[in-house]
Length: 236
Image (cartoon, rainbow, N blue to C red; front, side, top):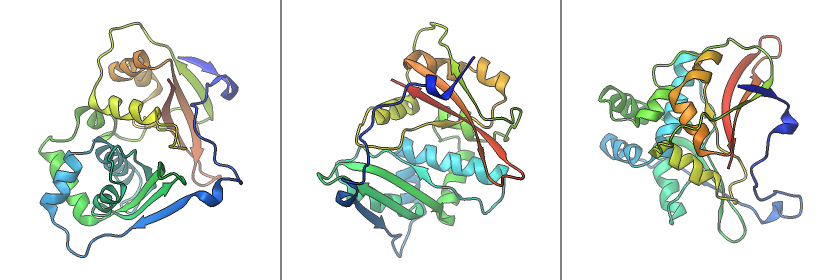
């Protein structure tokens, strides 16, 4: 890895949210249905790599910090029917917000507050080894590692190996190419040490599929007792 400055990172081209176009954004909230079925929830999870990734990250954070931990996750929707997708998400998360541009294109999808039935369903899918193996590699059963306690930026240079695409990376890279989504995607690798990040085969695989792969170490939480998270982001 090569340490760089923030200014050296190439930004992903996204549509810009300004004061002028802010008024044209529509924010829709989707609410959980009164009746929920665990088998239906399992089917929704298994059919969506984005939902699996959001659940796995939530699962990682809960296990490593506190049982009530909940953070906002971003999901990219490829479905043509946004309302149908939003209602499916509401079966899993108690808070689902979808922002739309004036022309109806999706700007952002944010979910939080995983419900207990979905957590139970996801835990059972983990036990049955039915979660995407790459998502499992990054989040499931990993322990938070804080071996670098300063804000920093690194570039992970490719080693020119042959690219081996997988469903999780396909989802992330295709989602990153959608200009209407204003928030770039990333992978939380806080369960890896710095040495593991340099040596991990799947991370090296990602480096071969993008023009630039970056590791961003950022501070979060109480300023008097900060926590330093590690995230992978990329330029295509």
